[in-house]
Image 1 (cartoon, rainbow, N blue to C red):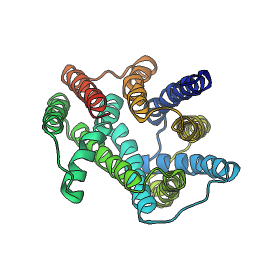
Image 2 (tube, helix red, strand yellow):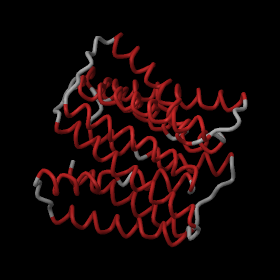
Image 3 (tube, one colour):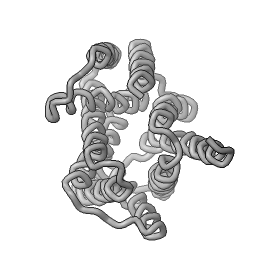
Image 4 (cartoon, rainbow, N blue to C red):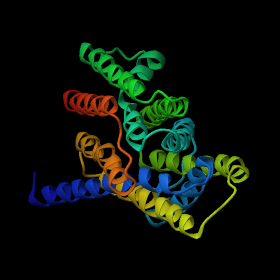
Length: 283
């Protein structure tokens, strides 16, 4: 590997760190906005989608409409919406960590629908992660928190659908970026008609917060991820991306004072450690 290649890889990994840190801002700003989660998700995606469209135009990335980009877009749209709802119902830590169980559901979806054989270590990882998920439900016994945890898991399932479809589509920037664009459009189209009637008051500062979500929490990070993924190895991207579930609850704890319970903290450690180990072992 040449010195130039090393510099490009190091720059890509730094961009991935910045990306994960910006993704982690979602929990705190979703908590600070009183609107319906559907409206938050819809407007955030509308802003982020505009940035993605400008990036695709600037890089001459063509929009590709095929079954992989459409199914990836549907998965990401539902994941983004369900994650926003989960943030409103349960703790930010629960929502983000449960969404990050996506790699486990990738294994399950691949085995059920594409007959991909699971190795012994895959089965072990699924079982341990499922055990970690159960701990979240021992902490939050109120109906709202329980439902929020369920939505967090569903967000992880739909995120797994997105990853599986992108993987089936091959190493194609156009399919990946088009899937993200489709997700933004779908989230906007779903969020506005449902969210507007459910939102009774809009404060000026909340408009600022949702712009921050659209620009800095989703829009720019997706562009940075597109740039970083060219030179950052997939394993490094996956592991660096784990900064999001680590940082997300930290910001919420510092600025809002929301702290997850002891069972949820143990579950989070189990899930993050297990998924990280699986990423390394499976490369």
